[in-house]
Amino acid sequence: MTSKAPTARPARNVPQHGPKSLDIPVEDVSGSNDAEKFATGRSSSGTQDGTLVGHVDNELVRPPTIDIDLEAKPPTNKVIEDHVVDDAYPEGARGWLVVLGSCLLTASTFGLVNSWGVFQAQYQVSILSHVNPSTLAWIGSVQYSLVFLPGLVSGRLFDLGWFHPILIGASALLVVATILVAECKEYWQFMLAQGITTGIACGLIFGGALPVVSHWFKKKRATAFGVVAVGSSYGGTVFPIIIRKLIPVVGLPWTQRILAFILLGHLTLANILVKRRLPPSNVSGGLFNLRAFRSAPYSLYVVASTVAFLGIYTCLTFIDTSAINVGLSADFAFYLVSIANAGSGVGRIASGILSDRFGSLNVLIPFTVFAGLFTFIWPHCRSQASLVVIALLYGMSSGAFVGLLATPVAQLGDTGDIGRRTGMLFTVMAIGAVVGPPIAGAIYSATGGFDIVGIYAGAFRHSITK
Image (cartoon, rainbow, N blue to C red; front, side, top):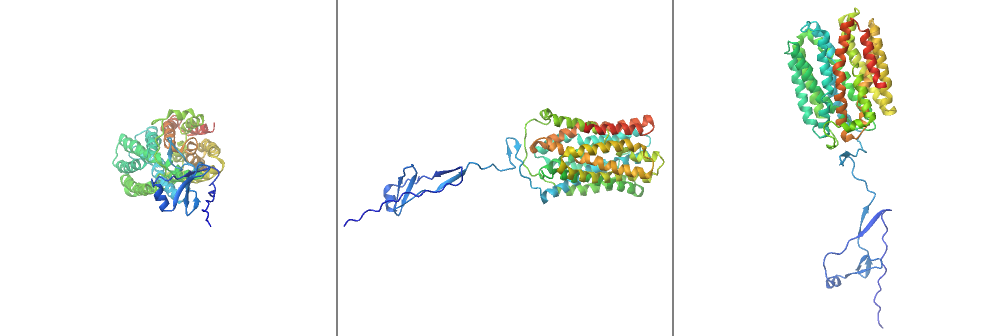
């Protein structure tokens, strides 16, 4: 009786893995011969569909397959063709630490610059009493403009990954410049140390304070920007009080030195906290990307912001002087700047929260309209109560403008280019910041009052709503 050789069973089908997967058979490339395959009980043969199968213990087994998912997405947050794929943002605790660090940066820059009104009032009655108020206002105007003017360079370098080296160097420069102001005796010395050097240092620091926050937030970006802008209100509220209280006790030189040490503490902590998240991006276009101005919304926003800055700081610069002119005490007038800056902090946080819900321009425009109206009303306030109310309301409404200033820019292009586009806005806007207060001072000197000054500043504040 003869036994039949066992017949091979047909190869079992292996289920596919997903609708668009490829099964790639792994061929035997070991180079083993037939004798070796017979000795190990293994051989190979082909199936009707051409797939290589192996015989193991008289059983046909399909070789392993490799799955390739044709619908797989590339990793996010990588530089791909000079653009950043920005579909995932942490929006978490580490980002809020960056916001805290950026808040300290704005306190040390804009907060210091917003305290210029106290310095001007002090200089007019002491060391620079022989200088015309309009000429003296140029120091503050240069500070204001230079906070924005270096934005073109600092913004581009931020995109290229030079954020931290610039931040460290500019922080050291600001502390040194503040100490040097204590040694100044002449107008040109104050202009060089407090106007130019301090302004450049503040500009280099501030140039990366907002773009770095954009690396960590998208849904809550406007709120984060609003919190960062509160640093300006904090510095603009606290620094004038410190300066005013210290000058009668230790004198102006030591007041400047103490202020320098306060800035050193703020800037040291800020340098530790802030950190960029996305990799550097060398987008095309060079330092000044003129192609960005082909976008009509971006170009119109830059022009409107520049014109608005012709009047944005007029009320804040002269509100204490206007109070003294109507017979109120200098001690009371001094606190008006701090009250306006405190109100500005409320406006910046509130506008940021509202912007995330209703859109940045939908919030920025009505707040700016109110700021212009309050600027019109300001010269006609002649009592303590009315000046306190107008300072608070003006601070709240103007704070929204400053707090949301960079938010529309972040929404008008790629995140990888945000530093340069924000820098271009700041650089062009510096034109309005540098000439605005001196024009207001010249109008005041020519008319002897602030009625026309209020009309001038309020009209330009309305420009961004057009």
